[in-house]
Amino acid sequence: MNVKPKKSLGQHFLRNRGVAMRIAESVTHHRGYTDLLEIGPGTGALTTCLLEAHPNTDLQVMDIDRDSIAFLKEADFIANDHIIEADFLHANLGEILGETYGVVGNFPYNISTQILFRVFDERDHVPEVVGMFQKEVAMRIASGPGNKQYGILSVLLQLFYDIEYLFTVGADEFIPPPKVESGVIRLRRNDVTTVSCEIKDFVKVVKVGFNQRRKMLRGSLKSIVPEGKEIPEEIGSRRPEELSPEEFVALATHLFPKKS
Image (tube, rainbow, N blue to C red; front, top):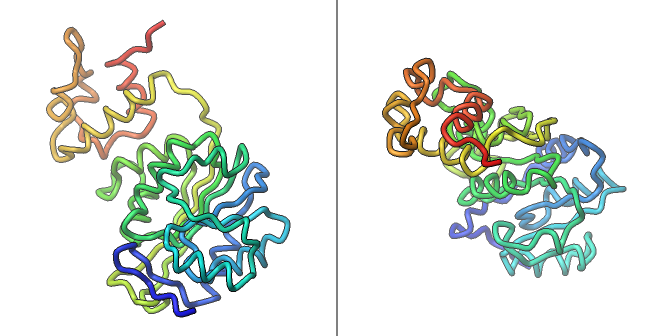
């Protein structure tokens, strides 16, 4: 079957087996999970390497591209009942996967950040993510405070995951070649299980703060500061990229204390 990458789905099929194997070998089964989900398998370049590198893993693949699904079923290197036609962003993952599962993939560029927002929501079930993104996105996720690339997803994910930038992949390793380089990162769940504020308040403070990232926080957060509350001067005089995830938690806790 001639499966062509679809621009509408942000597909760039990896053609270098060495790169695919390197991604597969970056999966460490952090915390001992045995279920692994590959998102956007395409024609299976990474899938075959995952099967080879992790023979004792229960690998399932998920795609919304019917051509890719049909190809994988015909190719027959992974069981048909492990090939799922579904959208990771909206699928009922609890019905499909186990209690904990790793996530891996050469992620479609047009939904790669949305995949990570879903991982954030599923953080108690996802101990590890190994993924390929546009290099700019990968570096943004892995960047720490004080870096201009540090942003909303950096803060949200780094509160719950240790993140490593692993390696860069050139555009010529894909069909069709993207206009940018790609980067592979690994996220491994840390020991943070609870925080002192409601997660929704933490997310709100982070998002509003970065929506006007050039402003000091006393200005960018002015619209959401509750009546009777003030942002501490040592925080209000700083810009959002200067705060660690833990400082954002402390700020959200100060502004929106948990109700007893």
